[in-house]
Length: 216
Image 1 (cartoon, rainbow, N blue to C red):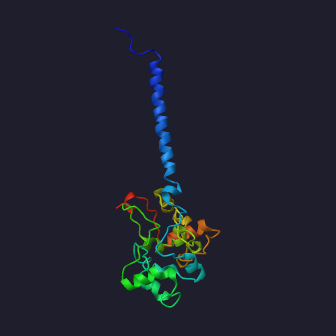
Image 2 (image 1 turned 180 degrees about the vertical axis):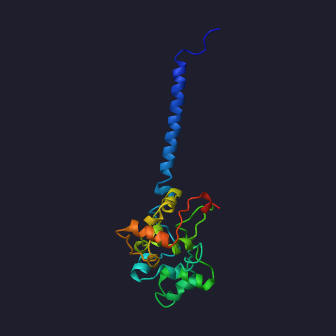
Image 3 (image 1 turned 45 degrees about the vertical axis):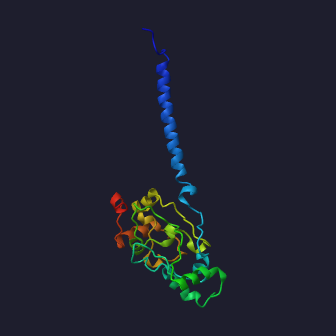
């Protein structure tokens, strides 16, 4: 019986397997990097909203505290979205005829809620509780960035699992005194490592990295 494959076929087969593995690994690396681009994560991409609400004006300009609008952030898993009633508490008297605020007035007249577009939208399989982070000394700015400088809000961080785990493994790098949680001008202390370790012990912060903590 004649030989079906030449002696060099073994070399070709091995080279093909190696090349195939190389291509697979290369594609995996490309996809992994694409997942971290702003095209996928929406980092630094401002979100259009039905009302041109500017945090920069309300926080830096007017001096409003985060909790005025996000009233449930200290007691609930959700920070809360301000109701039309909250908006109209001020805008029934200030800028009450401004055309840009007509969607707010229409919501007030009709009783239909404004459909805001989510900026920080976690997948359904991820559980996150705002209250526990806030009451343990994690500042709004740490996750959301300098919201007080954003005319339109964008996502400052990827919210990928590796980003969350960085803090869960070493909370002392990010923790701050509880009375500074809502201070958007707060800067980490020069002795953050020392202060952080002290606060972690004082606030009884645990380094929670089990899957079930966030995936329930």
